[in-house]
Image (cartoon, rainbow, N blue to C red; front, side):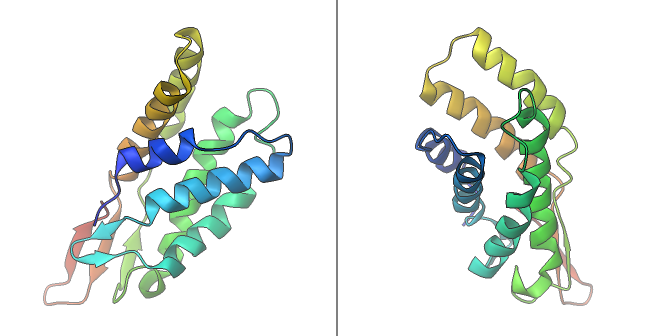
Length: 160
């Protein structure tokens, strides 16, 4: 199994607008968790516990995202926090893992900052905006994350 961009797009499109930031953050965290639950490194899939570790780090990182312009920084920070939480779980996140390097998401903030105003200017439909957002999140989630498993030499697989 691997993470699928369309899964994330569907989850984002299905988010219900809410008036309370905490509810919005929880919805976004859950949506990203569904997407990330497809992550695998070689034949080793992320565990439900690993997803929960990620969500536990992502949710507080989204605090303040409803302030004008703050989502452009808070959402990428939340995604980075998600993968740091997963990495901290080691074998609880990926069975047998002896090391987990989270995707660096190095280009995520800049890509987000460019994509959001472009979506607004183009007056995209909800489905198209969700697909664009999912594309940016997906492209960064599958680059640079690694899981090391025991072996001689140790086996290193990308997180996909």
